[in-house]
Length: 160
Image 1: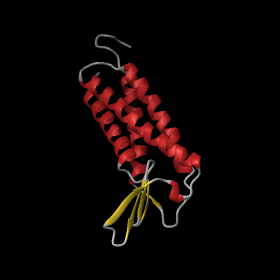
Image 2: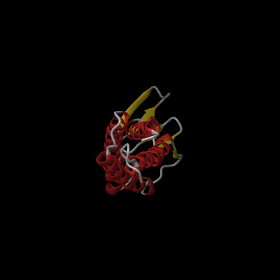
Image 3: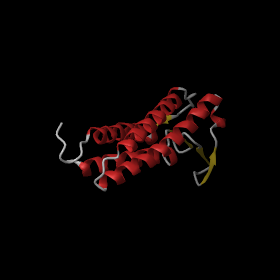
Image 4: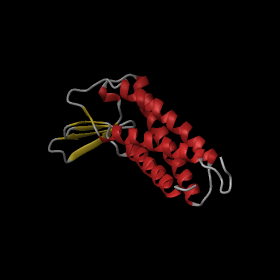
């Protein structure tokens, strides 16, 4: 592969985007009062020094919405792992076609769950989109690009 370090970088940036979107990425925020992510929320009281982690139940969304959040969270973490495996194999001068296919499936699964989570958001007064959604979208685009580049790669000495 001519551009293996570019593929490694794409896969690792995509993995980082998915990891932060799942764990620390607030998908919506309400000024300094609350952060809403796919797995949990953080609500702050008073001056903002007293912050507590909470579930998604207080937002008033449906059970399906909360389950799609869990699916997006899990899908992001699985995609993170598989993209790291893909990057490691490419860095070791291998062509990990199975890992790339698995990454595409993980990204598609996370994408479907994440899009359903975004579309079904019940809306909260003052909530605006935040970094988690953008990191999630970046992970999808860069992850798919890296996986397709691996699948299109040819072993040395093989002409297309």
